[in-house]
Image 1 (cartoon, rainbow, N blue to C red):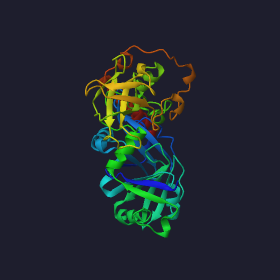
Image 2 (cartoon, one colour):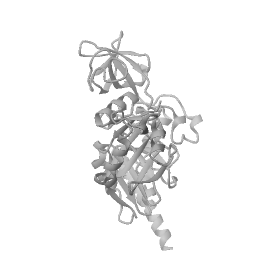
Image 3 (cartoon, helix red, strand yellow):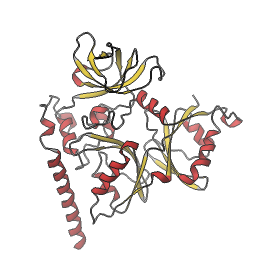
Image 4 (cartoon, rainbow, N blue to C red):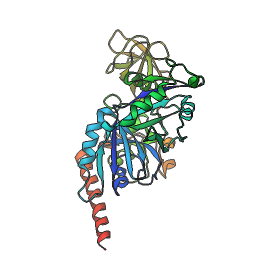
Length: 382
């Protein structure tokens, strides 16, 4: 109680979308409902391929004049290029990468509210964003930690970052003062963030988020709005849900010795192929003894309590457990389908969700977008 960790996440990309069509444009590019989000709203969303495969987990802060989108470092360039490619000449949208002009921090833990209050920051509710006037600048205070813990994320202008960081540093154990008697923080960088990410089960690009999985299979139901209409990858994700076609799920696992990402897993006792290690921390890096990992397991294998072992490395064994960041049920979606109670739970054929090729879906999405723009143009002419 009273403790928090301040993570420097400035390697994360910050993209800014401005212009009258900004919300409608981003609405068609990601999985959550951006069009109906008013100023001050905060949403987590997924970017996907045309066939609904996971690209990135992002955070969208809705401002009065612009949208700010936080993306993973590994996907900053590719998402920027993809968004830019889909902006049509008649779109009133301007895309700007402001990463180099901002710092991104996450303050995580039960001491968050106490530290912010002591610094004079306004209160911010989960799922909202507020402006904090401090050190002569305007800081975006986002009501989300980026993990399954109490906390906030700050988007700080570059010219205010050094002074504001110093103010937070007054609450560290290394700088004991009367100010931090009730609230203390630890300072963390990318290595500490990676440790917490794995322990919490937040999926990362190139590890858990790949062209082999959908957002639903890696515990990102909360990023998907199933009633929002057309967007890139929408048709596939709807099929995956309606036909119960999720083939794998993301879990945590603790192994008795060091394992590595990419290690193949089998079920202890039967030797049946179970899945793969997607992320692995150094041995004893977590709060519990052992090698903490994230694993992607076949749906049919089950989940928590399952004992698995590495196919190689002498058969190192591990125990599967749940991860707090994951949302796995349609009831936890940003919005479940209106007819979700009538959906079939029978498994789909292996090829059911891939009836259309990526090129077919890309063309279909582009045609729909062009038709919508043409209709809007005709309406303006009238």
